[in-house]
Length: 312
Ligand SMILES: [Zn+2]
Image 1 (cartoon, rainbow, N blue to C red):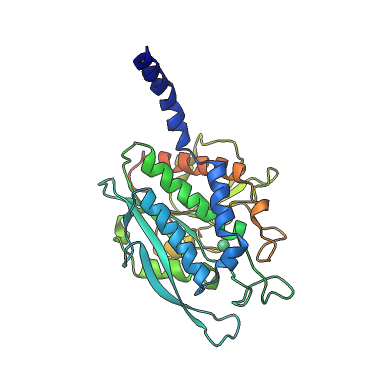
Image 2: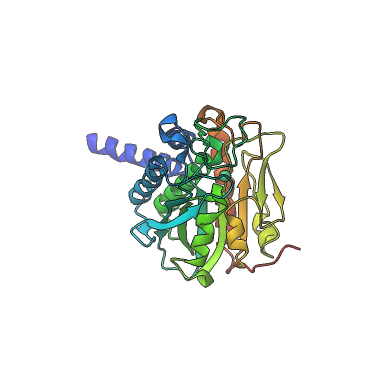
């Protein structure tokens, strides 16, 4: 009887487990709360807390059994210069965090999100009146995107499917100083760029507004995107935008003739201010957005490698 019961239990828990790999609002909130807590002091480039954020990502990559694909384990160190304000220590050390899911496939999909933010308001581009000394938590910008990156890494590594593409997951450093980490990566790639299928970027996906929907940029960067998007729907509303450059790290890939996507829930009053706080992130809507992103990626993998097209 006991054996039968255990068998029945495992039979009924299997589908639950399969559901458990889907993007989860609680996990998203946990990542955002951690990365954008006051303790992390805004993850300013070159700070101890910036380094701690990169370690948090690397630990998750390891947990999901991703292979290190930086130059020093998961890390790809580089330096970034602060240009918008004058500071004595303008050259800062930071790094990208890179993990690889090897499906022994010919092409690789890159999924990215930047992990840095404005720190204590002393590296420029804050919209606060007196930014110096204030913690710029950067919950939407871009702890939300990093949470998305980690949830997609968990999904694709634990779904039990050997996909027709490999995945390279990258948390970029120094985006706020001018896309420095992503530019460094495309100029010093750790996989051959001619084996990249497309790049999908998440920057600010935590402030879903049901009236607006989530914007998905890059729609004009591959001739196949319209076919890939066909029939995609979910619990969040979305609209597309053709542009492949501007705003965030996907732009670095677009300049190398790689098709891109850019997920973004739009600007708000807390943008680049100390009030961009974790409690304001809608993690339930973010999970819905990530399911849409998964549907698009899975549709794209049914096709041969996408064809880059320039947006005029
Ligand atoms: Zn950002």
